[in-house]
Length: 412
Figure: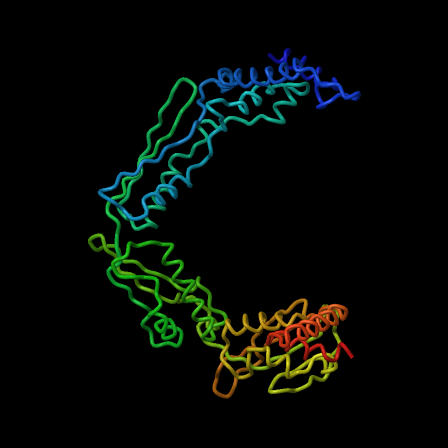
């Protein structure tokens, strides 16, 4: 077969086999194409019956696995659970197509070769076989058991069966789930601390519901939800990782969930922060190290001056206020509003701990709002667009009005 394929490949060098028409416009010979396609098809057929002969002696080709769920009755999201269990199966079996294994065949013909057509085909199209000995059955069972626990099946077991033939083997897994555990009680942090009180205040929006099946993904989402709430209550340094869930599963197919802040959480993560000095730099560049005296306006430190942008216009688009509680949504609103003015290429907000707290003992953050301007040509084009739109419609949006005011100096 390889000798026949070599002859076909040599014939491919003829122009009438490679082009739809010859140099003179003549039609290619149909017999040449049929010969080439026939050789390819024959080679695929050959791979179906001979690919397995390259499997090492005493080994079996791993052909895949099947997962069977045994449940005491209908369980929630059974198809999703089936898919999740199948996703942990490793390794993936050798590729096949309609029962054929061409990649295995091409790999086999190149073994021991250092050059030639067989070596080329092996390197280009071949794939080493996945053998039964490569399958980590115990590890896969452990992963499946873990996924079942995460979905509330605390009494689940996983077993396997290896089905072998002369040269192939399949590993089938059977997961016996038992009854799913449901949530009986939910306990939020109960210490007399600021952070515990803030977490308790988020309880009305909790994702955890009494009677719902235990699910680790829901608990993870609940941590993220609480973190988002705390970020809008001044807890700048808090992260979801500092929130711990303890689960009591000793009840009869039910669990009690206890929420705790980790004892190892640093002090700065468990206290709210207030904003101290807020600097607005409307002409920020990385190479700018010049120190200037700021324009002080409404408690802000405004840089560099008001030759291009008026402090009033920029502060009106800023939702971070001096001596206010840090709230992440206000930070995001500030970036969004400043960018919507269409006069800045980039807007970045940096926060860092202030040198000292205030007389009330509150922790504070200093804020740098760094704005990189668009090029002046872009500013003038923006202003011309605004004037044209105003003339045609008689009015403009609030955002465009702010843009025109900001660009007044640039157009002069």
